[in-house]
Length: 165
Image 1 (cartoon, helix red, strand yellow):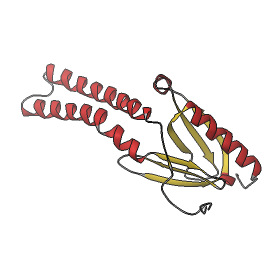
Image 2 (cartoon, helix red, strand yellow; image 1 turned 45 degrees about the vertical axis):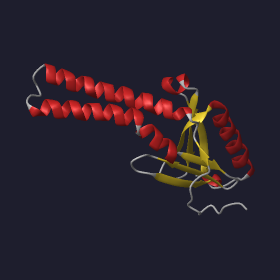
Image 3 (cartoon, one colour; image 1 turned 180 degrees about the horizontal axis):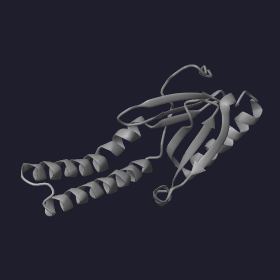
Image 4 (tube, rainbow, N blue to C red; image 1 turned 180 degrees about the vertical axis):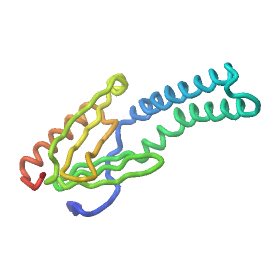
């Protein structure tokens, strides 16, 4: 049974498991930068007294949470699915966003591989639609999955001329 286009449901496919390592690296690096700034502020005497301990604790917590908790949380949430009638995405970690775009509204399909994504062999697919809400992004796909998504959407949109205005 093909789901209705207006049916808001959780998409079926998880992103690649390697996305957890990529996100841990992203958040870990950002946390280390924040922690380094805190250490410099403490060392230079800009932050003094009890605030220096609080600032270091918060900085350390950001590193640990960012590298050890957030990636697994995001992995559990990030999902995608392409059907003959719609593109389904779900993303976020603190705020979840679930979207459906009818295939007839798809205008372009792009892939992106930043340096960190390339290091982990991952790709982001961006689907531009005729919607005021903007593009749909599927992060953390393997290169093969991303290429398959592009092929499937290209084939499906060509077979279903719509109002992608």
